[in-house]
Picture (tube, rainbow, N blue to C red):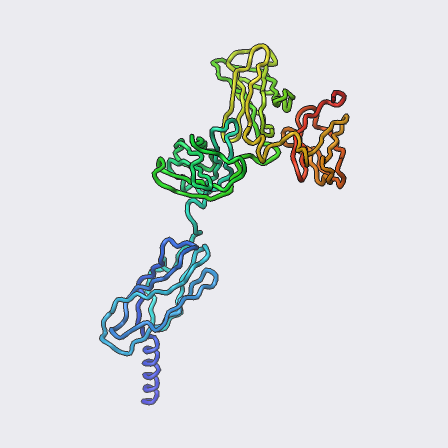
Length: 430
């Protein structure tokens, strides 16, 4: 009986000794907070040692999925029995974005931290500027005195209060600057930068620096070093012919409109309509850079109001406009990305060395390389940018159908060049 009691006492003492706590964890603090994917994360275990001789023998962390396992052990070779404040820091390193849970594999350590402190969140890294996408930096469509920055904001929690953009060339010289015109940057916006009086604008694509300032140009928020082509991609850019009523009465009816190139060849036509419910109308076409004329006329006697027609592009970038005449049409001239007409993105009549020779033969268009090389891939588009024909040829000449084009401007695009051509109604060609 005595032997049994003795054995029980030894086992109990051994169990108590193995379960002895030498380090009490009262708090778990993740540093930094909030944590991001770019941070070197540490976990601070804040608490107290059981005596003046107690110590943490080892501590390390292992991450499996979203579980952070901290393996920790403490010992006490003997000392004054008094709680000694202690913080043990365990390095975790960088972690992917996600919600993580902390668990312990402990020996001689007691976990008394509140349950919520056993979880932490790692968010995606980066800055507020990473939410901005510079969609384009291009000429103002109707003048060479301004540049337009088209920007998208993917994170509306940051709107960049009272923003303005400044554009620099590769030498750091100011090319254009925006006057503050918005309270912030919305989901999508277009910003007009006026050309600096002393600026020399490159006539070809260049490497530039775009800066975003906030609070009326007091704080620099973002900087982008990007390649810039101020011209729209070939072969044409979006143009929006418009009409609206700016008078006191209703303007009801249809209005025919047309656009001609600098040689007065009609390149696009259409018809607006205004009703008692809708006093505005528009169309969308695609034109190469150049000089154009627009005309609009009433298809019936006027009903009142002040109908006014004009041109614009996306982002409410407006061009010239004028009243619809009550008698004969009056041509309204306008330039459309004119600096690009002769530049790298311009569409010339032909290149004397490597361009195309285009000749209409009835309902077919003869396309021939002037240098005798194979044409390769070839596309035919109308003025609205719609593809009417695609094919290829290993010869230096090819015949392509003009069906569906009708009369007006078309665009011929090969692997080597892009040219425009005015199609005449079959039977009227020169």
